[in-house]
Amino acid sequence: MAPALPQPGSIVNALTLSLMALQGQTGTAGGGAMILLFQIVAIGAVFYFLIIRPQSKARKQHEAMLGALKKGDEVVTTGGIIGEVTEISEDRVSIESGDSTLVIRRDRIAQIGSATTGARAG
Image 1: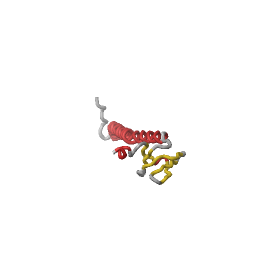
Image 2 (image 1 turned 180 degrees about the vertical axis):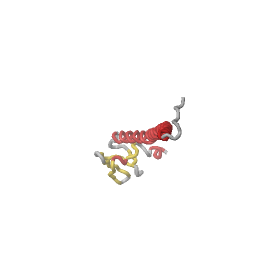
Image 3 (image 1 turned 45 degrees about the vertical axis):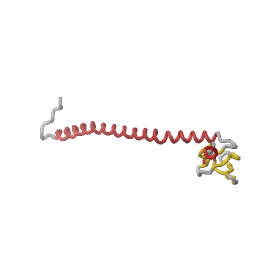
Image 4 (image 1 turned 90 degrees about the vertical axis):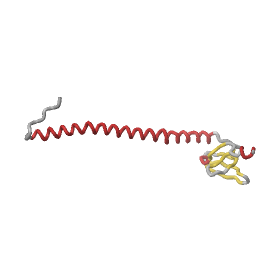
């Protein structure tokens, strides 16, 4: 049952109508805020599962690959240089490529293994 409206012309009339209007607005604003909160959470979940999680998984996999690096491994650098590891220090690796010996940062190794096996076999 709807609340009774005050008599016209009273001061309470304006106050009551204002309060009734505010109560009606709060119900709709609360629903809009919940939808906005849901959208923000959904966007955050999309960013986590499509960007952050795969990137951290790839970083952990790359760190594990570099941890298994040993002398004599054939490597490919991020610049495309192919060579064989001759020396390993904590953050630098010496590789021999052709007649040259290069010193590179350890994290610049993109791939370990025979990158040219298919070319040599064929």
